[in-house]
Length: 393
Image 1 (tube, rainbow, N blue to C red):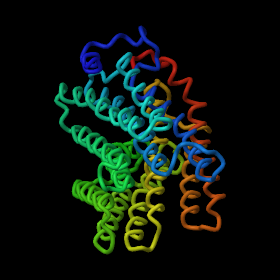
Image 2: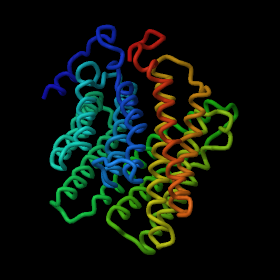
Image 3: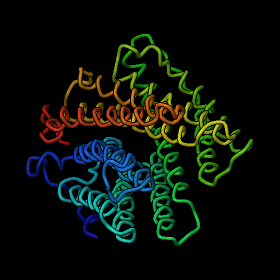
């Protein structure tokens, strides 16, 4: 496979290639932001009957998770993998080929038949995960192998989605997407537990964040269990108890990170605020499993609040740091953060208050797209040019 051989050979100097292909965060952050900015308005236009587009609800939820979110996950892991191991993750032609495969998947899912969409889209995660696995294996970095396992679970969930859409298995296409939401939340739980308390303690003098290994293990276990229960349709007291347990331990964990000391630092508060949607999402899921709230409330709080919120926080922070810039949020970043948080509140209102549903949906979509358009406007010049400090990457 050419992608493997390219990844294993010494990559060319960044000066011999366009800066866009210097490290994984560059193309994948731009592609994800552009896709986010246009796909939600497209879905809203179709849903509201404004435009006759070849998309439905299954397309929307699939593309938010297996299109938008996975692009950011891969871009982040390629960039973090370089730091963790000192070895190059895909760049240059290999990175361009993997990004092109992701883009081909989006095109095939939009205009292709279900079979064509499946054939192209299903390739991305295995192909993208393989070089990341090789880098971790070659460096002996066992600590982060859990992330390869989680990428494998995402690939399996995507395969189940396509098998369902093609009528090969009698499974709702929503079930594997619910599983994917929780898999990404687990990834955020792992990475967030490493970086959020450390960033907070380092940035706010005198702050002593609290981490507890027992709470961390309980959080991962209950979050994963809640995801399995959700994906397999467990409802009633049993499902609600697991989801409520996940909500409680996630909230305890976050409280130890001292979120209230971050209010004057947008690069910090966006991570705390977005992580806070995780316990809220599982609490809503528990209510949904008891028939007391719509399932959509949990889907959007976790998908927009927790996942997209942390994505916006990380694609700004890591892009600033890895282009040699100061880790400081200006007006564009603060606007993005406020817009994405306002968007999840409006989307929740659309679910819980039918009287304002259509207006709240449109307003939430405007906030969502504006946040990612602001990212593209501000960060495209950063990501298309070499680091300002002269370093590689």
